[in-house]
Length: 142
Image 1 (tube, rainbow, N blue to C red):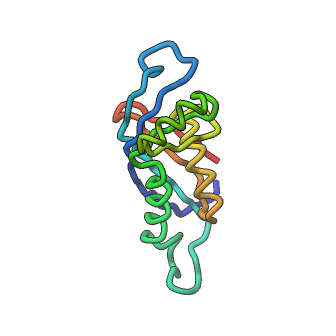
Image 2 (image 1 turned 90 degrees about the vertical axis):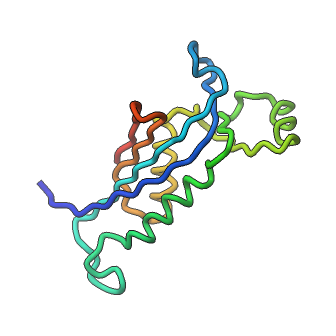
């Protein structure tokens, strides 16, 4: 078994969504205080510079996680194609902040989205957990 060093950073965002083609309460517009927990790992600690002896600087890591969460904070998460253009234009005209995403806005898909965004920034992400509620958690793992 390979030894690993790791860090975890947590952030949250408040956002509304609904699930299209779903037959239950979640097909209606509702909101959550989403919690995001990101895990990064490396086999070796950095050996040079200001991050010597670290996986990453906690400040850099937390800032990256919070920045991505901030993109979704106080928005209406909309699955692309779930609302017609007229409805989207009307909502935008009323000042609604929306994030149209190319997937169904489930916790599982949001975990995968966070993973991809943070991995693209060069973070050694191995797992992202997203909580819709304190009792319900989804995750995406490398």
